[in-house]
Amino acid sequence: MDKMKIYGGKTLNGSIYVSGAKNSALPILFSTLLAQGKHTLHNVPRLADIDSTFLLLKELGCKVLRDGNTATVEVSRPPSLEATYDIVRKMRASILCLGPLLAHYGSARVSLPGGCAIGTRPIDIHLDGMKELGAEITTQSGYVEARAKKLVGGTILFENPSVGATENIMMAASLAEGTTVIENAAKEPEIVDLANYINKMGGRVEGAGSSILTIVGVKKLTPSEHTIIPDRIEAGTLLIAGAITGGEVTVKSCHPKDFEALILKLREAGFKVTTTEDSATVYPLKKWKGVDVTTAPHPGFPTDLQAQFMALMTQGEGTSVVTETIFENRFMHVQELVRLGADITPKTRVAVVRGVPGGLTGAPVMATDLRASASLVLAGLVAKGETTVGRIYHLDRGYEALENKLTQLGARLERLRE
Image 1 (cartoon, rainbow, N blue to C red):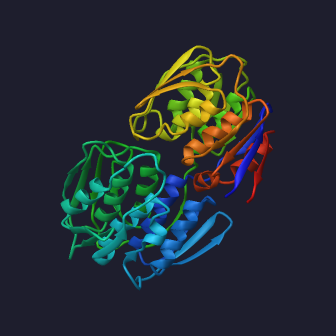
Image 2 (tube, rainbow, N blue to C red):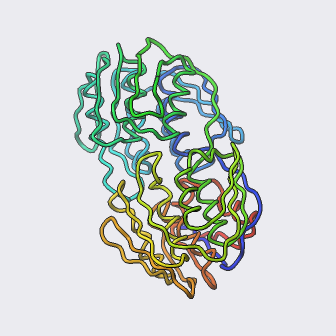
Image 3 (cartoon, one colour):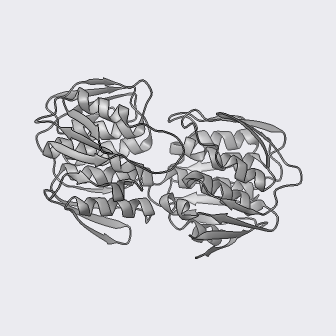
């Protein structure tokens, strides 16, 4: 299992480019199952989760070729409509093949998913939505089995907005008969990107980015070409890396409006942050104040940046309160930050963070999930001495060559292969 050794105390400076969004590339790759033929996707990041998706698409009869950050997916009728446990267990997003397979071929058998251990994230909301469209759903032997002669549009109301369920049902509804309305839909930029690609294929999705999505089903979709949006979570992580080390870092090829909630919190803490249409720059600040943050669905503060922001707050003056409203187990990084000397008191979904005047001190720590691993790397950048982060494979699931990008900005770190 790879580890990352970080030599703290280096100030990051310079400019860096952001990769394509993992959380956009995954659903768009699965959406190719809606249309037989050759799809061309640009700005696809090199990540473990992307590799798992390619494996699953190949298992479903697709030919997948990669040339740099361009991927072509040639879809033909699958030899089997089953997404097996061996692949699905590695990545929760695999459930997103359910909607396209069901809509296009009338049935699907998908293993119950795995992924990060940050909460239960039940898929009931996905399955209930498919039932509303007329599917027959059973769960047995660890698999979801879905059948429908023809999906029929309907109105689906989410009690809480769910990104995955919005995506899955949007894809299924694109080939359903009639009109589907999703109320209280997720508004994330990745939802908009998926809707844009479905529309490029000939779909009729309206309202993406708002709480009400309307999907008019069409008889057939046709492959197209698309460029994945920049990864707002990677952009935010790199911006925090500059902030926590007291440097001036410009994040390029990003959409600052997509992570505006983070920028506002950085400014509230005292940082100067400037933006253009496709870049954001954070400027040096020796002392910053602790600020409270509560995660919320977009356009609120992203849960995927909570752990990284908490690392920043361990170096702030005074006290900050971090409230997690999305996932019940997303404070697993707290005890690892404490090992570095952080003063954090977790209370279920609330963590009280007190700035440590003497700073953090390097120590061996263990990553528990994707964003926790990024948090520990950020903390290691400012900790005195050496910090070794174990289970760094979590990082590879969602960040494309993060260590290389941090090195370009002046960090001193290395990957230890075992």
